[in-house]
Each structure stands twice: as C-alpha cells, then as structure tokens.
Image 1 (spheres, rainbow, N blue to C red):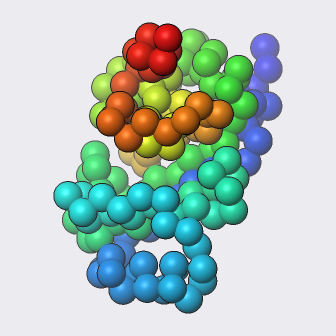
Image 2 (image 1 turned 30 degrees about the vertical axis):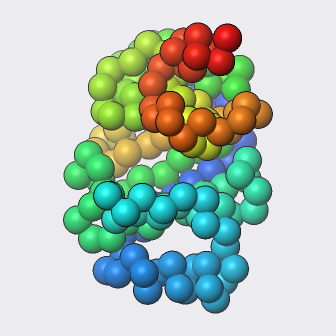
Length: 156
C-alpha cells in the first residue's frame, strides 16, 4: 500500500495568530503585496493567496478567534483523486478523518468560497492537519462547508 505522503504535493496553507488583524493585513497585503482572498469579520480572520489560489494560502487569526481551539494548523496540498480516497486511508491507519467543523466524516468536505475539497485530522499533539485540493469549479460563498456529495448535488 502506498504511503499517504505519496499523495502530498506540497504545503498549501499555514495559519498564524496575530495580535491585530488590521495591522497584520497592512503588512501582508500593503507591504508584501499578497492578495486578499477573503476577510471574515465575524471570526476576526483573513485569508490571503500566496501565488495563485491553487498554490497556497495564509490564514491570519486575531488572537482568540481561531476555530477548534486551534493553536497550530497547516494544510498539505493534494491531488483531487487522492483526496477522495483519503478518509478510508486515514481510517485504515486508526486516524479519524474530520470535517471542517471537526466532525467525523467518510468523504471530503467542500469549502465553497474557494472552492476546495478538504479532509482534516489531528496529530498526536492535537494540532489541526488538513489535506486540501483546490477545485476548478466556480466559487460559491453561499455554500459554506459541507460534504462533497452535497456540493456535487448542488452543482448538478
């Protein structure tokens, strides 16, 4: 059986806690020139493209606003075909696959605003590890985050 690492093509995203989101955006967007992908005021978070949307993303979370008591999070970039098989492969390794909201899943979730297929798990220290494949479909911010089957049904 192939290793999961054979399916990983790179690090897609990382997330940083910041003391002041406005100040951080002034630096990363204003000075470094990264493109703002999405700002979520209700979560005190912002997401920036690093390269194009299929290459990488940086998440910035104002202190105390990160989900799932996240202290560290990273995402590996994967091919779509491998990601669709990942839930079963993780289960075979006794690693529970998790959805966007931290719930157990049997298929990838889709984050509609990107859109991207995702599967999460926790490492032994409780850090959030994500496996992600950016989709070619048009973004749908109203979709939220839901199972791949629901995305496909909605897109017909």
